[in-house]
Length: 177
Image (cartoon, rainbow, N blue to C red; front, side, top):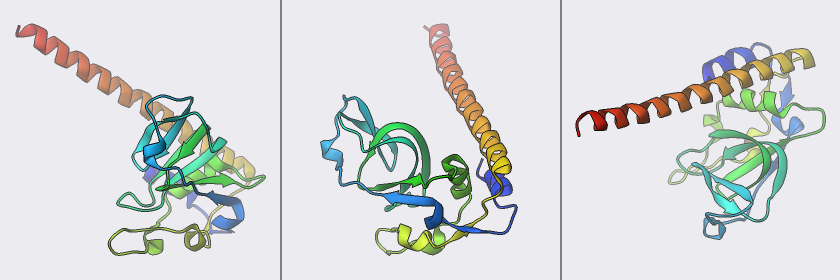
């Protein structure tokens, strides 16, 4: 997926800085304030970590791991959610496509912006100055839609593999009872 995103989103000359099209938000929510029940999901560096009854944001956003071993890892969400302190969430400024920017960042090289020896960190103030290719609206819509549809199909196929694997395990157990 990353290779295809790179091909499609890096096909032109970088023409816009990240800080011109994205806003970066952080959270002070700590993992010990998250529970197994609640109305809204809470995300951490490894994905969904629990729930809370309050949300930080409602809408499309790019979640980015800002410190630790997964620094620079991305997720896309489109709902009510909160994040813990290991993540930032990026939102699109007016008239910018968050979905296209998500796929462009998927192919983005964060390595030059990583600081810290013991615990790696990235800061929006640093990588926000980097430029990426932002094409015409028609091309953005086409690229984002294509990549999103492929990603959704991959999720369906991965779930099918998990289901078939569980079914295989069950059948093998029943065969040797």
